[in-house]
Length: 342
Ligand SMILES: [Zn+2]
Image 1 (cartoon, rainbow, N blue to C red):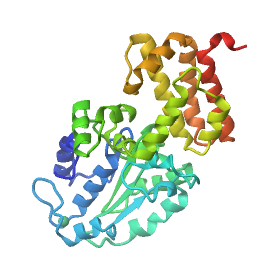
Image 2 (image 1 turned 90 degrees about the vertical axis):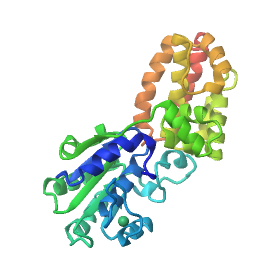
Image 3 (image 1 turned 180 degrees about the horizontal axis):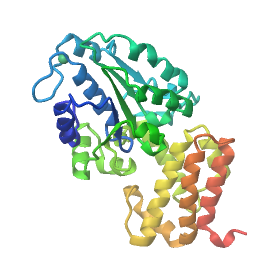
Image 4 (image 1 turned 180 degrees about the vertical axis):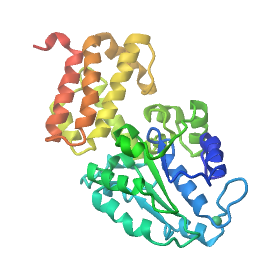
């Protein structure tokens, strides 16, 4: 199982040993950055392999494996949002920070309709065909309804693999027609060890910044992302430094959900320090956090964290990105100087 992450071995064995099971749709669910998509790709390759090994691996040598590795298997169809069609693995979140234009983040009905030709044609190999949809929750309502029709009357020999970071955003009607698979999360030691093998310099720091999702942590090691993140934290980590208007101006071109999640993690650490003296994400910023915690209005911080949750929803479609960020930064700045707010 050389291609399967160590924390997925058990699940892999379970799914590959029962691969003749009757499920025609799987829903692989779990947080972003833990290797769900890679698992789904490996599973697809295995299912399509002409000569899989008894221990549950694709042979890597047959025609089918060859096609799969070259990304052109005629019996495999992958659906992703337009915005992430150039990305592989789970690097979309970090990469999106850099992109300036905003391609469609959703999976459209046209993309699901286009599947019909594929699922109703005759399979090239032994009849098995696989459709991989990732992230499935990015299907808009029309697309989800179109998929539901296919799941309700499953075409023979077609396996649908849905990958979802936020399965609760999928219609219940879709979820109920899939076999649900909880994707495992590695423990910290396992993830740190894996990151070291990948050449990450400060695995603990990257892992904490990535909410303990190792594949996401790997992208955090990428220099431009780290630089942008560090610059942002630098701006908000000192009581004298923050200038909401300037900061909003600077960050408005960034991917807003990412900026909001940076803010959430930062405030989470502030609150955590106030309540327990411990922090989770910004291990190298202990001194700044201690200083801020001594002057912050804890009650207002709790309320702010709550509004950030709804900001996370709004951040996907803000009317005006600059104003959206200004509001967040002004509220944040006011936490540090509660006496100056009128
Ligand atoms: Zn093979």
